[in-house]
Length: 134
Image 1 (cartoon, rainbow, N blue to C red):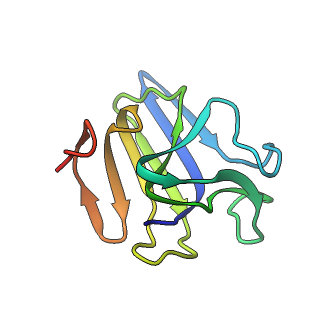
Image 2 (tube, helix red, strand yellow):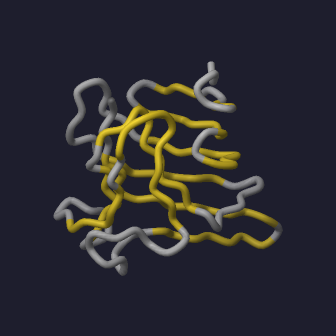
Image 3 (tube, helix red, strand yellow):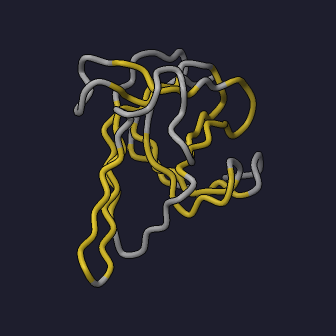
Protein backbone atom coordinates (compact mmCIF):
# COMPACT_ATOMS: atom_id res chain seq x y z
CA UNK A 1 0.00 0.00 0.00
CA UNK A 2 1.24 3.46 -0.82
CA UNK A 3 0.98 6.76 1.00
CA UNK A 4 2.08 10.05 -0.48
CA UNK A 5 1.78 13.76 0.02
CA UNK A 6 1.58 16.12 -2.93
CA UNK A 7 2.52 19.70 -2.20
CA UNK A 8 1.99 21.95 -5.22
CA UNK A 9 0.95 21.58 -8.83
CA UNK A 10 1.98 24.24 -11.30
CA UNK A 11 0.60 23.93 -14.79
CA UNK A 12 1.90 25.91 -17.72
CA UNK A 13 -0.04 26.01 -20.95
CA UNK A 14 1.77 27.16 -24.07
CA UNK A 15 -0.41 27.62 -27.14
CA UNK A 16 0.06 30.48 -29.57
CA UNK A 17 0.01 33.13 -26.88
CA UNK A 18 1.93 32.12 -23.77
CA UNK A 19 -0.58 31.33 -21.03
CA UNK A 20 0.28 29.98 -17.64
CA UNK A 21 -1.74 28.84 -14.68
CA UNK A 22 -0.40 28.29 -11.21
CA UNK A 23 -2.48 25.94 -9.13
CA UNK A 24 -2.16 25.95 -5.36
CA UNK A 25 -4.45 25.03 -2.49
CA UNK A 26 -4.23 28.18 -0.40
CA UNK A 27 -7.88 29.21 -0.82
CA UNK A 28 -9.22 25.69 -0.29
CA UNK A 29 -10.91 25.05 3.05
CA UNK A 30 -8.83 22.77 5.28
CA UNK A 31 -9.99 19.18 5.08
CA UNK A 32 -11.56 19.58 1.62
CA UNK A 33 -10.55 19.18 -2.01
CA UNK A 34 -10.62 22.19 -4.35
CA UNK A 35 -13.54 22.38 -6.79
CA UNK A 36 -13.09 20.22 -9.92
CA UNK A 37 -10.58 17.88 -8.24
CA UNK A 38 -11.34 14.20 -7.67
CA UNK A 39 -9.46 12.22 -5.02
CA UNK A 40 -9.53 8.53 -5.85
CA UNK A 41 -7.30 5.51 -6.39
CA UNK A 42 -6.23 2.88 -8.86
CA UNK A 43 -6.56 -0.55 -7.26
CA UNK A 44 -7.69 -1.00 -3.69
CA UNK A 45 -7.69 0.97 -0.46
CA UNK A 46 -9.08 4.18 0.94
CA UNK A 47 -7.16 7.31 -0.06
CA UNK A 48 -7.90 10.50 1.88
CA UNK A 49 -7.15 13.64 -0.15
CA UNK A 50 -7.54 17.09 1.44
CA UNK A 51 -6.00 20.54 1.67
CA UNK A 52 -4.04 20.91 4.91
CA UNK A 53 -1.81 23.60 6.40
CA UNK A 54 1.93 22.97 6.04
CA UNK A 55 4.65 25.39 7.14
CA UNK A 56 6.94 24.14 4.36
CA UNK A 57 4.40 24.88 1.60
CA UNK A 58 5.94 26.76 -1.35
CA UNK A 59 2.96 29.14 -1.14
CA UNK A 60 1.45 29.44 2.31
CA UNK A 61 -0.57 28.05 3.96
CA UNK A 62 -1.94 24.89 2.29
CA UNK A 63 -0.80 21.79 0.43
CA UNK A 64 -2.76 18.89 -1.05
CA UNK A 65 -2.20 15.85 1.16
CA UNK A 66 -3.01 12.17 0.72
CA UNK A 67 -3.15 10.55 4.15
CA UNK A 68 -5.04 7.34 3.52
CA UNK A 69 -3.79 3.99 2.27
CA UNK A 70 -4.32 2.77 -1.29
CA UNK A 71 -2.50 0.79 -3.95
CA UNK A 72 -2.07 3.90 -6.13
CA UNK A 73 -3.78 6.99 -4.71
CA UNK A 74 -4.46 9.55 -7.46
CA UNK A 75 -5.98 13.02 -7.41
CA UNK A 76 -7.31 14.23 -10.76
CA UNK A 77 -7.76 17.87 -11.77
CA UNK A 78 -10.84 17.64 -13.95
CA UNK A 79 -10.62 20.86 -15.99
CA UNK A 80 -7.09 20.47 -17.36
CA UNK A 81 -6.28 20.17 -21.04
CA UNK A 82 -2.66 20.66 -22.11
CA UNK A 83 -1.14 20.60 -25.56
CA UNK A 84 2.49 21.51 -26.13
CA UNK A 85 2.86 22.62 -22.53
CA UNK A 86 4.57 21.65 -19.33
CA UNK A 87 3.68 20.58 -15.83
CA UNK A 88 5.79 21.19 -12.76
CA UNK A 89 5.03 19.52 -9.44
CA UNK A 90 6.60 19.95 -6.03
CA UNK A 91 5.96 17.16 -3.57
CA UNK A 92 7.23 15.85 -0.27
CA UNK A 93 6.94 12.22 0.78
CA UNK A 94 6.36 12.02 4.52
CA UNK A 95 5.31 8.42 5.13
CA UNK A 96 4.75 5.09 3.50
CA UNK A 97 5.70 1.48 4.13
CA UNK A 98 6.07 0.29 0.55
CA UNK A 99 6.76 3.50 -1.34
CA UNK A 100 7.16 7.18 -0.69
CA UNK A 101 6.30 8.71 -4.03
CA UNK A 102 4.59 11.49 -5.92
CA UNK A 103 4.15 12.52 -9.50
CA UNK A 104 1.83 13.56 -12.30
CA UNK A 105 -0.69 11.89 -14.59
CA UNK A 106 -1.35 12.79 -18.19
CA UNK A 107 -3.83 11.64 -20.82
CA UNK A 108 -5.99 10.75 -17.86
CA UNK A 109 -9.42 9.40 -18.77
CA UNK A 110 -10.28 8.09 -15.30
CA UNK A 111 -8.69 6.47 -12.24
CA UNK A 112 -7.91 3.30 -14.20
CA UNK A 113 -6.65 4.76 -17.52
CA UNK A 114 -3.71 7.20 -17.55
CA UNK A 115 0.02 7.68 -17.99
CA UNK A 116 1.81 8.32 -14.68
CA UNK A 117 5.27 9.66 -13.97
CA UNK A 118 6.12 8.61 -10.39
CA UNK A 119 9.11 10.01 -8.65
CA UNK A 120 10.77 7.53 -6.37
CA UNK A 121 12.91 6.73 -9.28
CA UNK A 122 11.61 7.95 -12.62
CA UNK A 123 8.96 5.51 -13.84
CA UNK A 124 6.76 6.08 -16.83
CA UNK A 125 4.22 3.56 -18.12
CA UNK A 126 0.63 3.32 -19.34
CA UNK A 127 -2.15 2.35 -16.95
CA UNK A 128 -4.84 0.96 -19.23
CA UNK A 129 -7.86 -0.86 -17.87
CA UNK A 130 -6.42 -1.61 -14.43
CA UNK A 131 -5.30 -4.16 -13.16
CA UNK A 132 -3.75 -5.41 -16.43
CA UNK A 133 -1.65 -2.28 -16.81
CA UNK A 134 1.95 -3.34 -17.45
